[in-house]
Amino acid sequence: MPDPNAIFGPFDCGLGMVHADPSRIRRRVRQLMGSTKDINECIRRWKEGDGEVASMAAETMLAAVVMAFELTPFDRATCRGLREPQIMDIWNAWCRFETEKKTPGNGYPTGSPPTASGRPATPQPTPPRPPQPVSASN
Image (cartoon, rainbow, N blue to C red; front, side, top):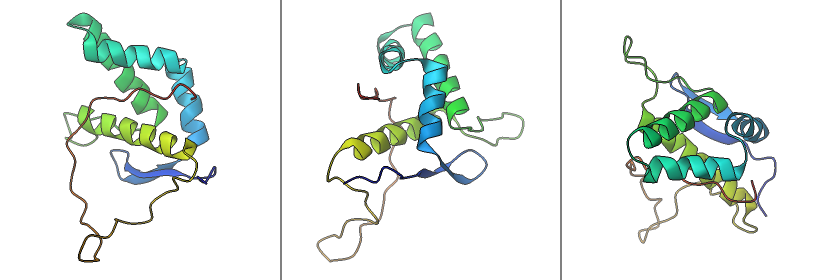
């Protein structure tokens, strides 16, 4: 059974590794973006829109994720902070976290799965992915 008290993280907020209270993240995402339907519509416009429609949806989504997770966006003067792909990686990790919490018996992995040699697999960096829609039960 998934742990209802699980903490989200660690993730890089742009200034270092941190954790987040899932209840606060859920509340802030709702305040900034609206319902699950509204969030998914914004993501759809970003992915399927063209020109100004896609640009506005991307700006809305990125701003909401930055504020909800208290991230530090990229600062071109200092070259510190997170770039857009890193911000969306955090959103996608959040969506996976929320899905895993709702899947009975899924549990949370505590390490890399063993390989044929019996040693844990070495994690490989993954390329940035587009934002994922949230599940309807959020």
